[in-house]
Image 1: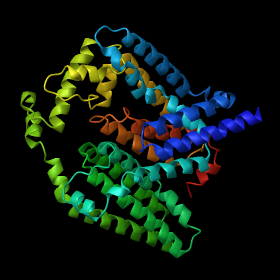
Image 2: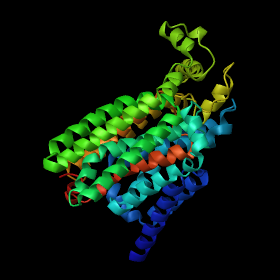
Image 3: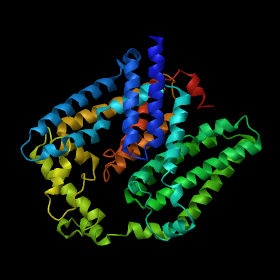
Image 4: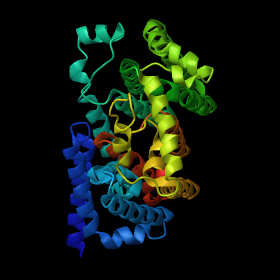
Length: 433
């Protein structure tokens, strides 16, 4: 029994390493990682059951899994050609079954070492497609307005680096607590490293030129930064407080300088399709031009018609791309560029309500972990900010339909779920002073 659990633990950890370390390299790494984690958890089935049997998330997950299986089988018998994408559609909706979340949460097991390993590999994997493509010439081209192409979805890459930036801001009080026992030079090095990482995130977010990322990140980052600044100022005393204030001043100065130097790129990007924006402002939908915004508007309008036609159970997993093919004067988009419309089209109101239950149960689980002093306030703030950010950008994006998005959402939600398995008080004290 102990040998089986030990094997399961190491196999699951291997799966986590494969997925977190290679999620930007291709679908194979994500699928292999999830498969290994599934085998690892199967070896430790009794531990899994005892850990999660009282979690509402598990039962909402089972409900969504059953619903999607039935929906996929129903589409497979549809005479209108929807069956050709049923299997792919089921894979795209895999994250909403909650299974990847449960696997990551169980493999992490509330271990801070495993959490640190996953987060570190995640950030290194993000740098893999970026670093080789930021030479002097490329940097100048991006700075002069060329949109960065890192051989991965630029919108997705902007989202993932935004999550890293939100984490850096949310955990600044934790970073401050790490520097307390250090001397002046080491603590300055920690702060400098944090500033450098934040600037890397900001530059990548800028170079991807994703308007939905910018508009979604701005309000969330502002609110989170104000909350974090308040905590830092309340904690500031003596010389340490002076260093914190100097660090904040330098960070603000660097961001302001970056914003000033890149103002032209931002302005050009935000003012593109201005005629379309003006038409939308006066509700003249027939005059929208072809382009990123215009195509989205037409997709959303057609999605509303599909939802009204089959409101309760939807058209089935994978149906969106087939339905979009029949819309005249539109490219063959794989989705409706709106997560909520996408779910309503494919799985209907019933499936959407189960999705809300799954999301709500994850929030409840994290809240209970905080009440039991298993996680810190910074931990909760990060998930609140990242959750609000993802919900905002999902009004104009769909980030679950590729392997990269599936892996990131699995790691993020799995980290939130594993909070219930962390040790009480001791872990919280590591984040709060």
